[in-house]
Length: 622
Image 1 (cartoon, rainbow, N blue to C red):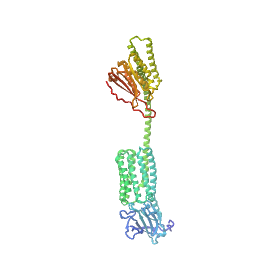
Image 2 (cartoon, rainbow, N blue to C red; image 1 turned 135 degrees about the horizontal axis):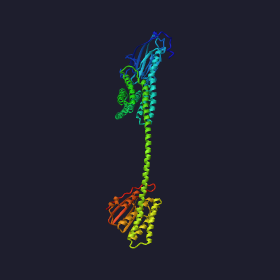
Image 3 (cartoon, rainbow, N blue to C red; image 1 turned 90 degrees about the horizontal axis):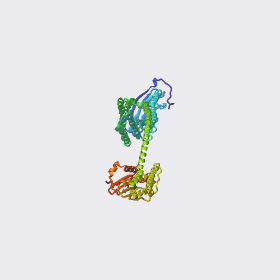
Image 4 (spheres, one colour; image 1 turned 45 degrees about the horizontal axis):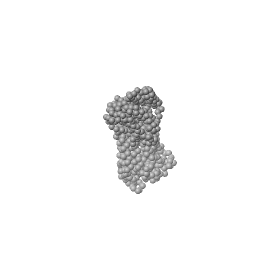
């Protein structure tokens, strides 16, 4: 074809190409030939959806022109776009056709084309006709772009400029948007609190996908143009929504209801577009695309006022960037709606520069955040050092207090042991001396002193942790029963001791020692104050696994409330000991019967569930 266009040089004045007229006419159904009538003069670029709103077939464009060189010089033709697909004839010779002139249509709407006309196809008289057959669906806003005819040296630069505007710029847009989208998506994944990064990543990826639709030459992966237009519209709406949310989060604006409503409206629109019939798709697209563009423009306008009131550096820079978006989006919207003439859309030209400028703004914001974080970490490190030093001093002081508390606790425990054990032995010895009618011999006094020595040795052994665990209740209570039964016999008193043959659960030395001290203190107090003549000690296990130890007498009783107020050291010591091992002490007293009952939860069996805590249903009687 290029070789056919070569010719012998002639004078420039003789080779002028003149365009005579341009006309368009709808094709008759089923003919696939230029119509004989119905021609209407048009100006290029042209769309016919308003001229023939009900037409859904092909339209022929007829361009008559005169070649002053009569085929002696090369003639080139350039067309900016064919919406949606088409073919070209020079006179009656087919010069070019798209791969698919039926659904799914080829997409030549953003594909500039260039041809050098074959000399054999030109008429000798110089009068020639270019026939463009354009096909597509109504919702594609069908038409023919700018057509230039003339010398290749003149037409080729026009064609390369159109390729730069309609192909190369969108390729550059797609590449930059993909890089920025992936970059800020990674930043958002690392720092989820920066939601502005996430929305900007979504906006960049959406714009990259939109740029890809500008470069596509087929509707793949869809099988028809209607679904392709639905997908393109959804990508544009997602971009507008994500960009609005990005500006709100970046500028610190709070629109809680609008932030939830905008994604919801976009989701509802997605469902609506995919379910609406193809016959009603065109008016919906003509409403949705300008509508979201107006939302984008309104957001750019409101952010100018926000930046003016806020006066933060990052917001002011972003407002300046959005101001350029505002001017460009307004111009492109008027071009798409054919309110103003021309076919040049400046968004592809300004978008790479604007995105790089926004990248610098966001990167500066990110670097500023990192500097603040670094400063905060330094302050935090200093505060941690001061706090650690203060905590060290506090822990040292607390350790001193705990050491002092341990010493006091040990002293208190030792005093209780002396009171409950050695004190009880002394009280028993005093009672024997007081109630003895005759003078006691040296043997009897020596026996009392040996018993006091045994109690003192037991206190020392228990303090050293060398207490012995008794395997049966009888072995545990035998020494205690031996001492008190002998005392009861000397005082003319009686006692009853009832214990089970075996422990229902194994008990350690600490609770056994506590129960021993409890019995000693309870019996000593009863001997001293109750005036009773019979004492009873009972140990048994309840149905709920609670160990119960009861000490009772038939004395005169006492005022339980008065004793519980803390006036009795022995009673307070007994209660403290029982609570320390997790037990509960219940006291009931009426004239003729006083009963002290300990409820203690036994340790659970190996692998078994824990037993419930002890409880008492006894009511205190006065």
